Amino acid sequence: MPTFGAHKLRQICRQIFAAAGATSEEARIVSDALVEANLAGHDSHGILRIPEYVGWMEQKLVTVGAHIKIVHEANSFAVVDGGWGFGQVVGTEAMDVAIRKAEQEGVGTVAASRCCHIGRVGDYPARAAARGMAAVMFVNTHGGGKLVAPWGGKDRRLSANPISIAIPCKAEIPIVVDISTSAIAEGKVRGMLNRGAPVPAGSIIDAEGNATTDASKFYGPPPGALLPFGGHKGYALGLVTDILAGALSGGGCSRKDADRVGNTFLVFVLDVDRLRGEESFYADVEELIEYVKSSALIPGSKEIVVPGEPEAQERKRRLQDGIAVDEKTWHQIKEVGQRYGVDALQ
Image 1 (spheres, rainbow, N blue to C red):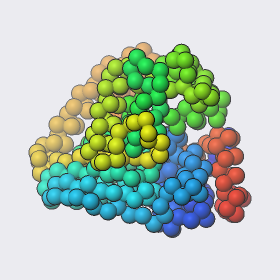
Image 2 (cartoon, helix red, strand yellow):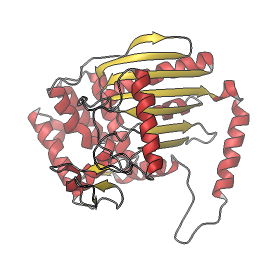
Image 3 (tube, helix red, strand yellow):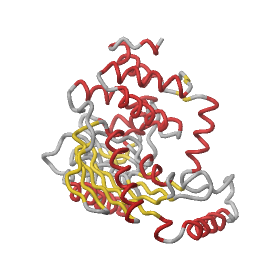
Image 4 (tube, rainbow, N blue to C red):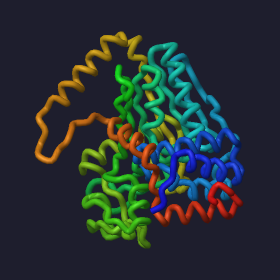
């Protein structure tokens, strides 16, 4: 597999998106987000997405130059329309609205719809944590993008419907939970298909509802489905996430007649200093982390980490060693780049 430095991948991404018609600011924001996902070890939301995003641009499914419009707001909340702009642009702008409202009122809530794929969901709550705020985010796919079978069923009825929570810490690294409510993210299955690797058992089923580790059985034809994580627990969380993100934003929940893939989301941002007092809050968080990490290790375990630490560790490693890209993904990126005459690929 070819390996690249983060700077080189950002350069390639920016040139491709700009050549395909994105503004320089959009190209920068989207490219930085994709490469940061790779650095964190979440390759499913990294540069693997370039051909998909460019394809949407070519189909006019992305509105170049779009920014959020506030449809309705009060002191502590807002409903925004993303105008089908780049998800990373819309997500960042909407998150900043929630942060500003939390700074003013102690809590800020934003519901957003008509947003293209926002990428790695954890980036947005982490943006609030960097400002000393806690955040909770629920995301669906605008009623389209159905990938997950309900508990006990075999047909695709829900999206992966991720949930992310970020909590600021006195230490530099915040706690960041970033999970799909499916047993595995679709982008990870795609990466395994590209590499010819098996999918972890208990993650997907084929079109007949049979358990499989063959990624091609998920894509079909006929297509299979992702399973909810933890059985009925992941199914329940996926269902309520669909409602909180889709019904409150106006973008809609998973339904038969929806086939356009985008994102709607609902985010809550809390100013912990206003609610509790920053130092007291941080002291409780630090005490909890120290207590959890004081547990004796099971055989084979090297350390106890909290959410957010594995990504920080992987980012440090990949900044030093580079980002490996599987051959199929790199071939697909090269095809797109060559189509637009991008010289950074040389």
